[in-house]
Amino acid sequence: MRRVALRLILSVWFAFRVGLLGPLRADEASSVTPAEASAIAREAYIYGSALVEGYRGVSDLHSDSTTSLFRVSLNQMFQVARIAGPDDTAHKTMNIDTLSGSAFVDLRAEPFIVAIPEIKGRYFSVQLVDLYTHNLDYIGLRKDGNGAGNYLLVGPDWKGQAPPNIRRVIPVETEFVTIIWRTQLFNPADLEHVMKVQAGYSLMPLHEYIAQTAPPEAPAVQFPRISHATMRSKFFDYLNFVLRFCPTHPTEKELRTRFAQIGIGPGRTFPPKDMSDELREAIEAGMHDGEQTIDEAVAKAPGAGKLFGSRSDLKNNYLNRAVGARIDLFGNTPAEAMSVDYQVDAEGQPLDTSKHDYILKVGKDNPPPVNGFWSVTMYDGKTHFMVRNHLKRQLINSPMLSSMQRDPDGGFTIYVQRDSPGEERETNWLPAPDGPMFAVLRLYLPKPAVLSGAWTSPSIEKMPRNAR
Image (cartoon, rainbow, N blue to C red; front, side, top):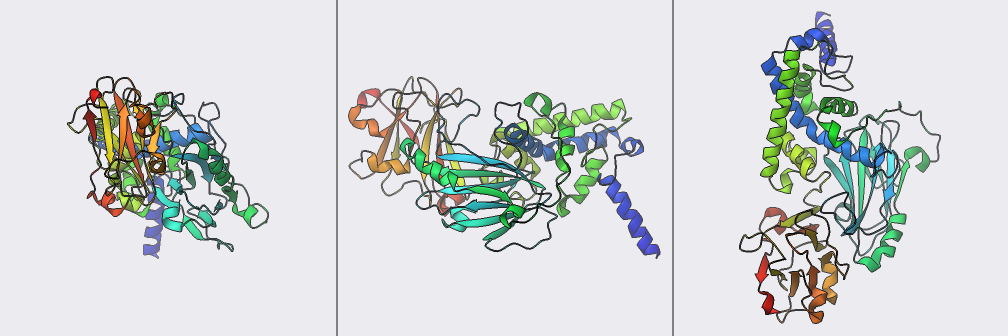
């Protein structure tokens, strides 16, 4: 009996410590030294940066209707039905290879069904992202082929049985999940066909799928407003909010216990009541150190393979997770898509199309190795927005090769320059700005040679302007 009682006491103590049974007591906060509080704050800031960045992203699109980016409310799906262009400046380096869609889904009351139609002859994917910003899974060509199917997304507390005609049951570690659809667009004339594919996507709660009465609703959530201006000043408030919907992972029990010592935990108010000014200053210093650590890591960011993926892919490297969320929120897992940035030419000099013309060679026997498709998109080097031109052409992609002019050796030369290379070469022209340029080579379903680093991307080479 003594052992049972001791285990019960320890269990209740631990629950208080990780924030499951109530707010942090003032005496718990006061037991932490300023040096310890600063170290914990630094660790928690790095740990929570991706969660707070991710919350800001979904809040803009799906919970805060006052923002210009708002699309649809919780548990509803939105599909983009137009092609972005130079006037779209909400995001930098926008991807126009695919038309996208998104939803933010609450799995607390019941699972949801993602239904996919048969999609032949084009790339598509459905990226599933938990509140940690882990890419927990994908639905799509790579994993599931191009046939129609229904996929069941289940939250961490669901114990039911999958209904008939479910192709896969996909468990989600957190109680909310972000869903991102991507559907390949061949060219502007293909827009109508993509819209027909999008019309075949659906998202529905389980009770609708099985035609039964809806279960009791989960408690209402008051989503706090968040902006770039408030992310820093209210950082731990936002983190505590998000953690309400993130059951403690077995690998993070000790970490959550440390965080609880300074008032960080599910649903808590930060800072704890009666926290001393000395501790507050120490926590602020720790947050500053965490921010500086992330900034330094962003400047020398590792490859995408260490920044984007599932929990098992990232191996609980919270700094890499923070860097990934900072430089490309909801970026793809490398096996799904990768990109190569072009900022300098083959000689290592900054790309500037006010001074030089350039070419990018695509060899007949050495095209970018992909199982999907590839593209090169042009952006202004200063703003990273798309470039206005009379052809209204923002990219060249592999589906366009059949209409392009071949080189004598069977390959292709892409002319990367400000002015037309001549009417006979305009099919191969990627219009550039009058000044610094920035281009991105995107690779969808890259082959093993890309993933392993064995493949070397082609360089953008300088070409004398009188060589036309």
